[in-house]
Length: 131
Image (tube, rainbow, N blue to C red; front, side, top):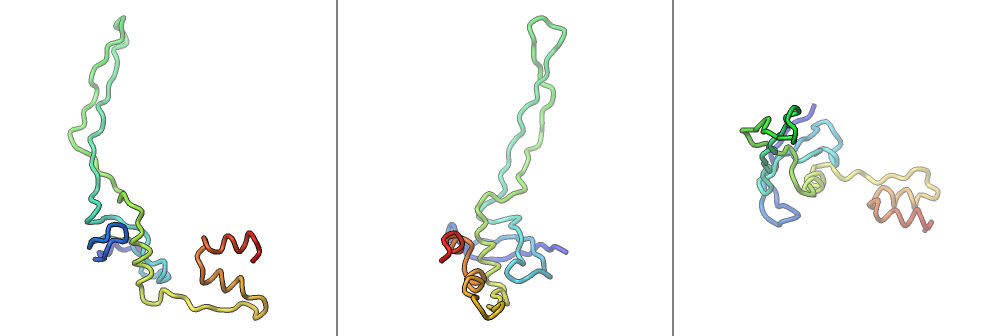
């Protein structure tokens, strides 16, 4: 069951106070509880007016166009237009987000411990070059 929750935080991109509405999974693992940003006070939803649809008279010798449909209302974007780095901050701030480091076999656990504690960006050279 997904819930919408409002949080007030400092935006990691603009360093300003922001109120965000976040889709959360209350039963999920703490470091992955916040799933998506649905609204942000710093990034209001963008609106646009759809383009006018044109049609053509088929029975006239030079094709002549006419306006077929005009949209009276503007459309609003459902997505927040930013990198959504605040999700990482919110997930890291959840109580119990840090999982305990565990060993697998007791022998040659270095790479497994590195995988559990380091980011994938740091792990990639370790795997590629066998360090």
